[in-house]
Figure 1: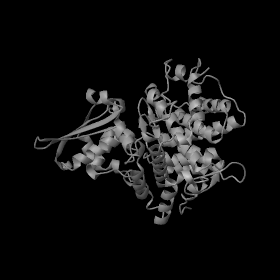
Figure 2: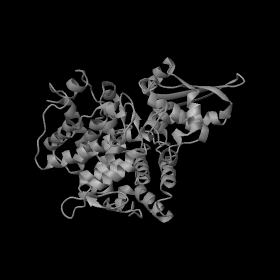
Figure 3: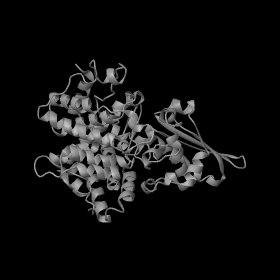
Figure 4: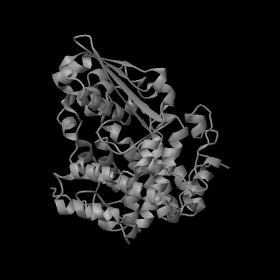
Length: 457
C-alpha cells in the first residue's frame, strides 16, 4: 500500500471547515483576493491570450467561466486559462522550502469545479485550505527542483485533492484522482533554465488543469496506477533517486498553523526569492544615490541563487520571465525606481541602459551565514561602495513567523486596488472585496466569477 497516498487521502477526507481557525480563514480570503488581483491584471498578457483562444465555449454539461470575459468553457480549460492569469505577472503568493510552490496555481481548479458543481463559499474555503496544505507540505520536504523536475506535479496533486473533496469522491476515487493527476504531469525543470519562455508561467496551470481532469475522470470510474509515490517506478524511485519522503501532514488540527497562513503574498512581479532583495534595495535607496555607487555587492541565499548567478541571461535578460528571476536585475530596478511594477516589466524596463549599467557594477556572494538560516529565514545584504570609498550597507531578513503574523487581508486589498484600478470601477472593486470578505456566508460561488467581469472585446 502507498502510505504517502493514504496520508493525503486521510487529510482530504477528515479536514472540516470547523477545523479552520479564524486566522486561517482570514488568510485564505486574503490569498483568494490576491489571486484575483493578479489574475485580472494579467488578462491581456500574450500567454493568457493564447490560452483563451483554446478555451472553446460550451452550451451543455459541466461548465465554468473565465475571469474577465465570463466565457463558459469546460472546467479543466477554465482552470488552465484562469491559472495562466494567476501566474503571468509572477505576483501570486509563494512558499519556498525544499522545493518551490505557488499554491494559488491550484485555486483556479477548485473554483472551476466549485462553480460547475454549485458548491458553497464554505466548501471553497475548505478546498482552498486543502490545496495549500497538500502542496506546501509536499515542497517542505521533497526537493524535486534540485533533482531537475518542475512544480507541475505538486500543483496537480493539490488540485486533484481539492477537487476530489468538492466532488465528494470516496476514498477509492480520491486515490485514483491523485494517481491520475501525478502520473501524466511530471515536468522538466528545463522550464526554468537559461532564457525563460512563456511556459515558465504555464507549468502551474498545466497542473491545475490536470488536477481537474483527474478528479472528473476518477468520478466517472477511471482508475490510475497503484503506488504512485512508493512503487518500483513511482515518484520516489524515478524522480528522487530512490529517497523516500514523509510528508508532514497534520492529523490533529487543534492549534495547527495552516499552510495558507504561511505563504508570502508578493509585493512585486518577481520571483519569490527576489522579493526580499527588492525590499533591501528600497532601504538602500533611501541611504544613497545610485549615481554615487562604484560597486554594489549583493549577498543572498545560496540555495536560491547558486545555479543562476553565472548564467549570462541573468546578467542581460531578454525576456520578462528571465528578468523577474534575475537577482542583479531586480535589485537594480528596485534601487533605481524604488519599486517594480507590472507596467515596468511590460515595457521592458530591464533592458534600459541605466539598469544594465548598475547591473554591471554588481557582484553576487552567497555566504554560509545566510545559507544556514534558509529557507526558514530569507536574507539579503547590499553593500554599496561609493566613488569616494565609503561603504553603505542595507540588510533585510524575513521569516516564516513574519509571514504568519499578518493574515494579509489589508495587503491583499491594497494590492487588489492598485492592480485592478484601471480595469474595474470603484463600486465593482468594492463589491468584489466585500464578497470575498463574506465568503463563508455565500451559498454559491458563481457570483464571485461574475464580479470579475471586465469591459473586454
